Structures are given as C-alpha cells and as structure tokens.
Image (cartoon, rainbow over all chains, first blue to last red; front, side, top):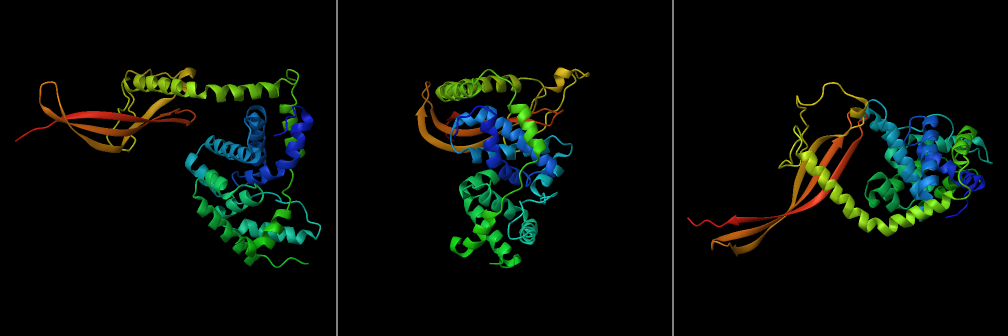
Length: 169
Length: 175
C-alpha cells in the first residue's frame, strides 16, 4: 500500500474509499451519523495501527468498520435488542448514491429497490459490489458459508432485476 | 450467473456511494494531522509490525503460559465455577467474602462467569502393566477448555479457549 505519511496521503485514500466504507457502515448502524462515527473510528485505527500490516487494505478496513459498528452497538444499554438492530438496519436517513447523469429517477429507483431487499441479501450485495470483496471474504465478514454468500448475491440480483425497470438506453 | 446479471452488475457498479460529510473529513484531519514526530509515525508502525511478525512465535507460548497461570489463579478463587463436565456455562455465585462497596478499580475488573470443557476426542491406547504388576487401560482424552470473564459494568467479555490433553490410567478389574 502507499507509504504517504502526511495529510495528502490519508485524504487522498479516504476520498477514494471513504464513500464505499460509509455505504457499508450504513448497513450496520442505525443512522448516518452513527455510520460516520464508525467510519471515523475504523479509519483512524487502520491508519494509525494497521496500514503497515500489508495485504489488501479494503477488506481489512471493512472488517474494522464492522467491528467498530458492533462495539458501538455493544456500548448501548440493551445489548440483545441492539444486536438485532445492527443486523436489521434499513439504510435509514439520506440518499445512498450520488446523482446520476441520466437523471435522479433512476438513482431513486435503485435505492428503493436496494432498501426493499432482505437484509441478509442486501449485505452481501453491498459488500460484493461496493466493498469489492470476494465471496470468501464476505463469508468471513458475515460468518456464513461462501456458497450461501454467493446464492444470496444471486437472489439479490434476481430481486433487483424484477423490481427495476430496464434502464433508458 | 455473471452472464445473466452482468448488465445489472455493471449498472450497480456505476453507482457512486455518497461521499462522507465534510464534518467527518474535518474530524479525521483533526485526528490524523496532529503534529507528531516528523515522518516517524509510518516507520514506527512498520517496525512494530515487523517486531510482531518476528516474535509472535515466542509471544504466543508466553501468552498461553500467562493465560494458564491466570486460569489457575481464577479457578482457585472462592466462588468461581470449576470446569464443568458439560458444555453449558454456569454463572458464578458471589460470596460473602467479597467487598460490599465497589470501588472504581472494581468497575474495571473482569469477573469469571463460566468455565467449561468439552471432550473432543477419547481413545483407548491399550493395556499397560503398572509397577505393582496389575494391568490397566491407558486412555487418552482431549478436551477443549473455555473460560469466560465479564466486566459487569461495561458488559464486555473475554473468552479464552485452550486444548488440553489428559491421559488416564484405569485399572483393569477381573470379576
């Protein structure tokens, strides 16, 4: 990974990967503000202590994001209820994606379809498409078999295809 | 699968997630741009990583030994549940000997809440002859022992699992 110690290095890196980290964090947190807190905690931890470890940084960062989200959930008062919340957030608050050139309607349509997916399918889809993880890495993140991750991804895409109208050429 | 959904996957990949707020970037800058020793931070991180890679094979046994010592101390304290015969964890009963008034130091303490051992493997290794000439079976058993501590104030927990081999000599009785 890049060895740039100053502001330019982390901000450049964060500009590239921050949006994806935030999108993934929003699956495991209740609000956008919580997701940003989790991303901050995970990114600072990564940048200060883990970036010298080598390997692909994005899977490591996503693991850190998930752990930070779990830690945040664990810190609240009702543990069991909160862990259920962590598992079942519905992408609350704000838009998920930048506006598209072809129009905002398509973006809204895709976001609505994503929000309508079963949580377990949506998690796999987000980690695969925007987290750029392999099915094996997703399996480790979600503690499920890789084959299950692959089938959930396939079901998610099938559902999205059913929900979405064909894009305007 | 990829062929079937490749157009949809491509469209989804074109969607760019929203950027984090400027406030988050400002908070990161406040944390990561703090003045530190000039350009030393990355080098120290790398050195730490190298140190860890070089010494982990020494540190792991040391950590295991420390954990065993801790487990021995814990299991000899009053009110602590000894390793049970089954996998179910049992809560620890508080004793009257414990101080009533909790201090701040107490708030940071982890208390043992369960100790369990699970039998993973058992095999009869055959007959042996003891010093007094009697016959006995040598039975090898492998357990997985798990100890759990919990901080009642923060609800954080610490779990330590270690394999344990046990060899038992069972005298053969003739009726």
